[in-house]
Image (cartoon, rainbow, N blue to C red):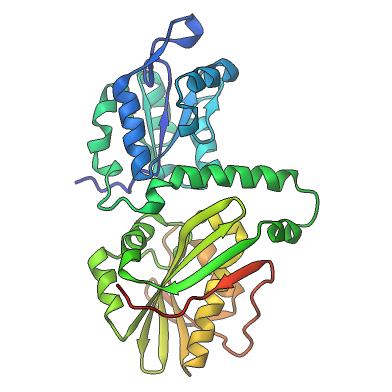
Length: 349
């Protein structure tokens, strides 16, 4: 079993990798059937796809359109820059680490350039294309509803980014125009596959880096000492899916946030503070002291800033673990550009 993290995006070369032939040399290129099969199989699992190709953009995109494949690729990099530069740009556009990328190319030089410049990237030879769906880095135990529509959700994000770039006015006015609806609820068993996936996939906006299996998460549902919350977001462009998770452990009058994470896709929407304030109100109403664990992982400094911004102060250090305590005296109201929905508690089935 590989000890690599799951691949979130597979970046494709085109000539003699995705298709047979070289476009610029006038070849009548045709997609390799095994490449198309791999593309579609991974898309169904929620693995994203992009392109790093040395080609002219317009005829290349036209050819992908002709084959009905253009829609599968996010933020394609088609031009003459080094492939490593293309991969960096793709990771930045998707807002993931380069260690969540894999790259497949038929040319040894291109693979070696990427491997040297970005050793965190999983580099694959085009002869391996048919085998990719069986590799552990591309395999997960569950394929959730959010997994199956991940590409569509990222495509909606592209539309949002375009709309934001074109918007003339203040940031708050743009956020208000999105008509955001943020739902916080206690997790039920139907949520657990996605919850496990979130703990495995979310690195940058995770307060502790803890991961939990389905069985562990299920045990929290039946525990009076634990509260497991999920958060989902949607706006006028469509759903973001389940993008937040919080695990609170109750011990006497102390409530401790063992895990707080948010998807990178909602970093700029300010909804993390809404989830934190909801937890604060629950603790305050229960007469509890609210603590939050933080473990530096090298990727999650933003969550340290989030705790401090939301009036958590350091209470204790235990090796790598920092324990923060929340100020529950003056909890601010939720921003009025987001509709916050908190359903009635239901049976955990």
